[in-house]
Length: 200
Image (cartoon, rainbow, N blue to C red; front, side, top):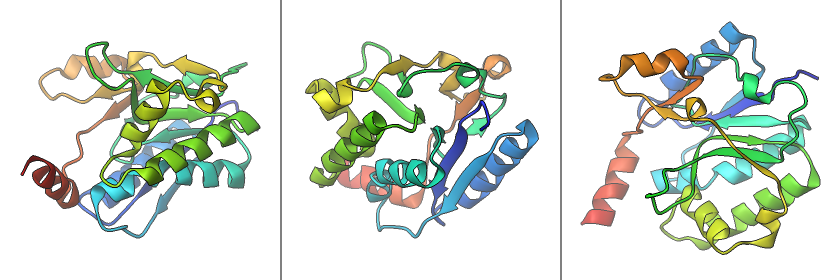
């Protein structure tokens, strides 16, 4: 088994996602990282597609039977994720948001071990996402965290360093020198329609 988790993600035909998926595969191959990046049929709206994330992660770790590192498909991998090398012993990991933000976790880069605690965690996240008619995977996780859900708290969590979730800013190119995983703001038609509906 590799000392690194398998990089996983999914994408739809919407917007630039197929091109970003191809680029992510190139990033992984360049860095010698195993990957599982899958095309899924669109589910209708951007928000519905985001809610597929916990189910996809659960299905994938059951299939691969090994740790995984989820990265949103419009992200870029600049360096090998050495944070997870060696005797890494957490159940899951994500980058916390700044304290002034309402929600606790960024969900664009997330690590998951392969064990019963993680499977229960993901099942709880799936159930919460299914309850939301008009909310994202991030909102579902936030609700579970805010409620101090015992299944979520039973899994040990590691707060990832900033270089594992950095929004790419063309006005700050020097920031990328230390970045392991950079992210873009998605801007597909389905997302724009969702935001317009929410603000309309």
